Image (cartoon, rainbow, N blue to C red; front, side):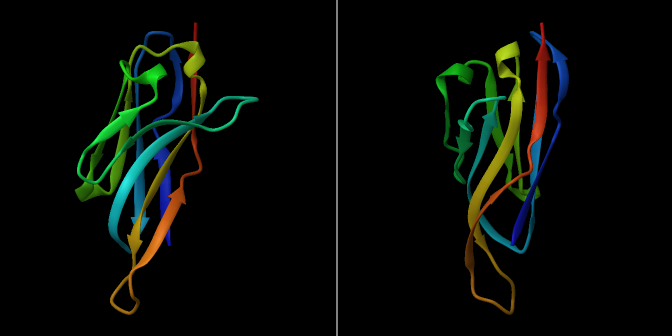
Amino acid sequence: QVQLVESGGGLVQAGGSLRLSCVASGSILHINDMAWYRQAPGKQRDFIARIASGGNTNYVDSVKDRFTISRDNAKNTVYLQMNSLKPEDTAVYYCNADGQYGDYWTSPRPFNSWGQGTQVTVSS
């Protein structure tokens, strides 16, 4: 099993910045894609950004010029740098990762894990 834990959320003024972090733990052999999603009150969970193991990225248009996704493979961590925040960015932000896990005693197994989410609130 692989667990993901997000951190870095909080309350900020419009125009401010936050950096979210998501750390994966467990018997990880390899992480493929890592991604960020968000869910605002009364809305569905939407894709924001993803980054592949090789570093290729893609973003939803609404955040493309303001947010940057990155990863540190040595730390099993994905980041989301959020600049020029707007009130409409207010949401619970979730990270997602897929890959393979295992140990000396077991063969590799696939995983697809979600974090519990971190609240981001942007005030005007």
